[in-house]
Image (cartoon, rainbow, N blue to C red; front, side, top):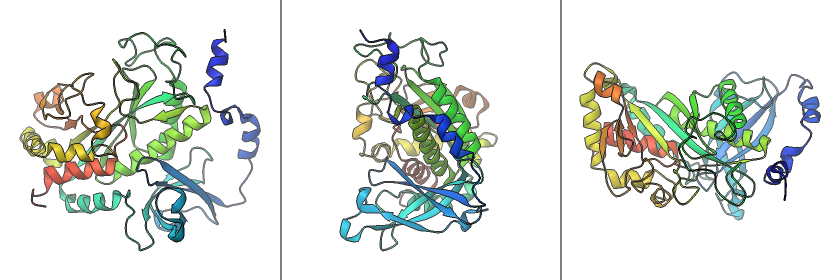
Length: 374
């Protein structure tokens, strides 16, 4: 019978076993005054992230210092080979926690050959909406759940030919028998802080090998920018450890929790005294657009969320809209403290873990703040 160490190593990527001490020897070399800039973008799946790096002569001080670039869209599910060049438009810049200062990570919008947004570039439409509602100072906080997998697709540290004990001790758990992969989570947290991503917390989730990190509060378009870069950092940290992070909304069938991306929402009026009335007004508007929102809350128009939103495992049913104070089985939850203080925020629990935050925040903002006919 194979030892636990042998089984564990078999599920890790080969590249993660390369000699990191040798890598560090090169990482510590001076750069001759140059700066490495890694461009990051969303590919044609609407879920995958791509990246490539170039050298700039000096360290950029703002996003305006980063030049546009291009890439082969036929290799990222974004164009045909006969007309493959796509434009990378830098929109926000972060410090690079992997190659360190002065190097940068730059998140980009993707434009097609005709300078129109690519099909999976939902940022452009989201930004237009956020500009329209600037006076409302709308804040978001998104709770990104994810599951760690081995290279074999089996949940990380689960028995190879069986299952761990039932759910119960894992949520916010501690100990080798309860928390699987904490090193990855803690390294990702530090990477986000170094980069300048607005990460505000993390915890182990209900299913073993499932974790969550929270990003926010972010105003307007910043929510999508910061969550996408946090996802990139997660995948990149997992790469170093030889495991895979999946955002699948229901990675394991059966009596196991799925993975969501609960979205907390607050406008200036909601945060002021007696703001609860504006929260209730927003929920009433959301109740009338439930079907439209479900279509926006995962990349396949609700098909992924069907596996998760069953009415079980701390979810509402995908067919029904509900709201309640401190109710984790509702579509919209009003935290108990908000109910008591009569101001604050509400939580939309419907978005799937693999949602596009630009689509989610745009849909919520449209419904809650813009006229229905718009």
